[in-house]
Length: 318
Image (cartoon, rainbow, N blue to C red; front, side):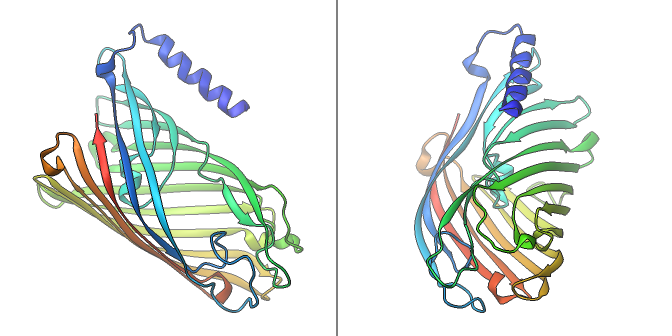
């Protein structure tokens, strides 16, 4: 509540500093409604089977029809409209397969640099199995509460170089794992550098490197992750697409007491986003589609998984 109060007061001060009354022309955004298919065989997924009999094999595949209401809205401030408040999921994150609801503030400097400060109230929240390793009885679900803060410095002095930093905290409501070394309450620190360059007037590449440190209550759940990512994007007439590929290596700090080894993961992602502007001649209505695969290969079979998602829908920009 204290975090929310500080952010609310900060945003209120921004509005107070502006002498402008509400102007609908300063409001812009995008609303997306997409449907699709999602599949995973992760034993850790709470969409999968509650009862497992073996810790040495992957889970059974779960297949779900999904509905994804997404979007964002922003309001420009100042006489030059060079700063704004916003909330929602950014198109930049969606293009590479990241879903994160944000409440934030952006400021555009004359030299091309943009500062972006955001609070992410739900990105670390969700559900987990109270004890995912239980083979004696059906596993039960527990809520995870968490939030994150994010600071981005985008296109520093028009060089194409950007910096993205975040801090996150999460807590499992009722930890059911017997071993202290596997307890999951954590603080996470993240930093990412990226560089964007144009291939030609229609397309470009964004290359990035990211480091994540998760400091968990259990040392066997504490890890360091190193990730490389490349995105190729193109826009030609009404068509635009972005293809993202990434690889991450994750190394944990201590021996897992159940499997008697230190966990190491190789994580792969391939994601494609596509948009057809003014679909069927409808002004500001766009056809959008997202498809991707995530694969985790681990030295412990229990943590290996594959995930697939494919969606199609419409967006409206205003």
